[in-house]
Image 1 (cartoon, rainbow, N blue to C red):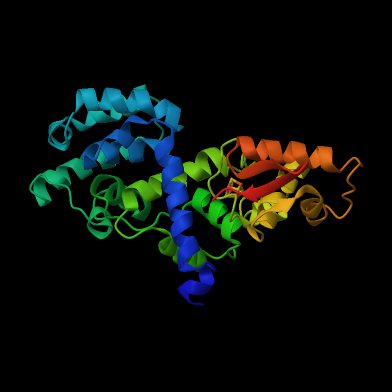
Image 2 (cartoon, rainbow, N blue to C red):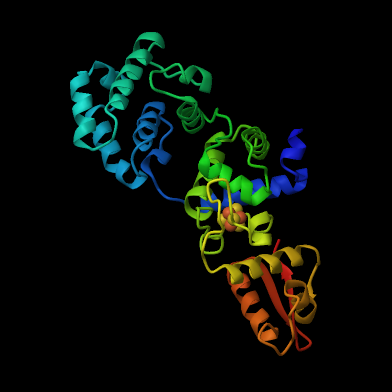
Length: 307
Ligand code: SF4
């Protein structure tokens, strides 16, 4: 399989998909303090802490840790027993992580002249730093990482682009999606998408997912994923109908109500339960979310996709 087959979208769509996600992330995201820094030590500490602990709880521990040992050099000079005690006092999970972090700081001091290495390969030479953490530090500190592929990212790619449940396909798809030289913002953004919108029970509309226009799951209503083997329970039918409206409008410049209706539901009948009133309600919701434009023209309602 080639890269092109792993992600069946053309270059023009690809650039719209990228731009939509980056703008969505930049407009609003959870404000974790380690997202405000590009210091590799601070980022490494946050990554190691969040391997075991919920992100909200990591914030206090991370701040306390950096108050106590503000730089890698400070940590390298610390007594290991103090670092381990800090770890236990803050309920941060396996104490080995504290030992490894201490050791990694000493490696930076002794083997790298006090400056962190900048590539994922070199970073993974540090004690306790696996490929995922190495890539996260390379991305967030040095904007020098590969595309992250974790469980959340796989779920997003599987749903949005109908990728097969296959690690090599996820890797290729994720790499093709990531804009060159933008691993810092991209990896943050796609992980945010998996964390607040494309969760196991997806919040496509509530979270204003920027990929609804292209998303295969949103269009078909099948929100299963590798880690979500059965259809998640949520207010499915309305969401699915919204998806159909969007995907139908994608194929036309504009459609009047009675042209759109039968393409969304086979049982559409202008005066029926699933008729004009129902469709107008759906369109108004979509208009409020900024996805669809609705106009009154010659006594009719005409809808088009906002681009
Ligand atoms: S539209 Fe929904 S299912 Fe598709 S990527 Fe967005 S949140 Fe996930």
